[in-house]
Length: 386
Ligand SMILES: [Zn+2]
Image (cartoon, rainbow, N blue to C red; front, side, top):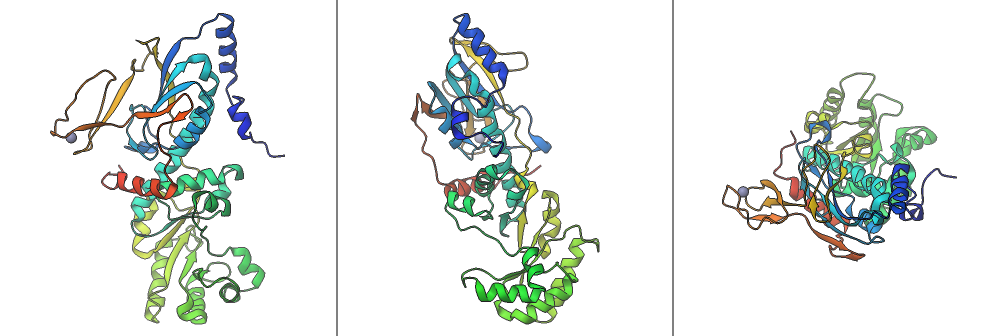
């Protein structure tokens, strides 16, 4: 069996730290069940990210729909900054006490993946980025990971089931295993070309047996115009500098008239390598960097009890509005009852925390992944990465 929880375990509140279960027992014994407001907030972002993207809402709402609570939240795909609450729950504490663990898990991981994917896509620019990291995490999580990689900006996902979930054809080239089973790179790409549907682009993996340069030239000569791209899967090549290998291969192909053959790279590529590789790369397959992206460390904190502001030390009490200026993008956190607030640039502030759920009734429309992806890319367009 797989050592994973199923959907019902999560809905039943079994994915909870036991101290919440014990808290519930004590509160029930003492008949204490206040109406509280609790907010989800990250005081720091990983890797010194200046901003991050809120994600995981659709799944969080799926879980919270079963609870007697009201929820205000940012939209899935919204940009947020440290200290801005991304979501607020209001209800009787006993009704949602045991769900804190699962709710955090849903948004912490999804937000980290979407943010990392958005950063990588920004760096790659027009070059397509494919999510190749399903194999780095538990398979149960693959569709969730790849959906978020896609929402962040990846053009495609590699896993078949993930493609079904987001409504896109999965993307891929060929594995080393095919080359090894076929006996040579040329035999592999020829078989690929003869067997697979014509709509699939012909991409040869060229680092299995021989030097990349000679394999490039071999497959180019064998396939001619039918070859769309070659894929290099060896950033940490035995020969050292990956950029130099790509540059050399480009030179040799161009010299022989193969200017149209594109270069795809994969194999442990990190965010910071992308700007260096961009001049010689036409597309990226990104695995671990996105699939194992750092999580956003949101905390859930009670900040109001029976209408009165109260919070633990180091947290701001009271329910809040998060405002974003429509003109300059500046943010402002103000108490919920603040009436009007103008930005110093003269622009108008809009609320980015809005009602998303009211006792099982969904108030915020769930957007399809392709639409979320476009809005994320648009939201981060003007933002700097550092
Ligand atoms: Zn402004």
